Length: 618
Image (cartoon, rainbow, N blue to C red):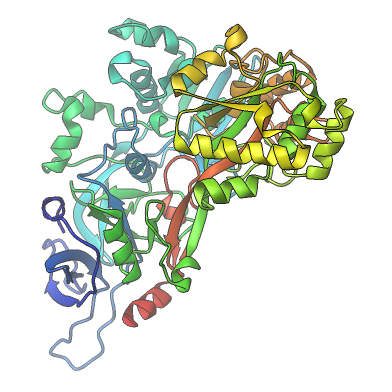
């Protein structure tokens, strides 16, 4: 199905499908081995509310009989991952420009990075860089690159039913230099470019309206040779390693963007037939980005078995759901799909994947109510997070009781530290804070944003405080204000406008504990909306930020979390929950979803026999 065909149709609810399978033999170039069996293009036509829905995919080759009555050897059967993207048109796959989740997914698979984030271990692993070291000053990072990762394009040759990747040239250190310089330039307009301000000179270049070659040369990144890259930071930062796995650090071939006829229009040129050089585990076979094939020159072993990624561009989520139910898609994002009437078997195939956006309550350390830790701990422990998750988001969230979420470097399991909901502990802390009853406390101003969900959540929390701490409902004043006003009135210098407690949320900019402990909580390196005085915990946060050894670093973050949310913790905030996405996954697919960054299709495993058996059952 072409993108044009997809965009011209508007489909109603799927009423039932009667498939007509049209098999068309497809002959490849004369360069193909004459003994190979060509693949089969299968077009399935579904009657959807009186209109046709056409899905085209490639099935395993079927051996054809020769004039000699002897068995014909089967060609290799490709392992195909069938997925969908619900959108109009192909996504932006420019590493330094896109902010689209779909584009980030494709970048993850098409372009190599210095490193790669392992979503199973929550660790950064080698990719283009086979190893690295950090200078004694903690600021100079030297990466030693592989010499067997290439810029490739599809060739005209076939082997075992697959297009052979043609090596154009190796990916070299100067390609990474070009990517970093490009991201630091304001003209590129890289989303979240400020993350790279950690690199010497990057922020200064970003402040310029137009950067000259001399300006770019002042950025602290240089190719010492083709396989050695040096990056100088403006301060020691162990978490810099995590940022090297991000999509906007992935290089494009400089010659592509420096071509006078193509330049920044390279994606349009690709869609019009100009070959695209890629460097990742997969390569695109056409400009419409509907079919990715395993890069036959990729030197790093796959953790899964997927060889072909078939991408179906659809207009609506309900169409994807219908195709998933017909077993034509392996996995879909079901977050926006109403599953209230779904079958039990469908609900059993739901996977909840936590996002890295945490909602929390923030305490004012200058408040007459929440100045002392026991009372902050009491009000936090009186909140039943599971009830909030169910009542506010219908279960599509994950309860939290400490700061650093799963899926980042340095994270601890969600249930290891912190009290969470514990009414008995809450009442003991009230007594320790000098109050046998909440009714003896001053009035509490509780500021939230103007959305209906915020009001619902605030009312639920207030009722919990009434029931568990014996507060009077009238003494907890919920103030609804526009979100901009909430931010302005909770600044450390907002004075009397500051409430006693307010709602906020924080999302990862990069998947590392420092983005939470350092950028959100530290007394000096964050906004410190709580107006919390510096203490031992801040010294540990800085120490963790500079500790290179990952095991030692995680041990420090365990201390940090304990000091913040343990039985005697400071409790500067009350963590509530992480929003979550829902996936529907067929029972023949195994993979670890990406909590941050792009999906890694080379880690997916398909049970081919089971997939074909389930599909044959209809």
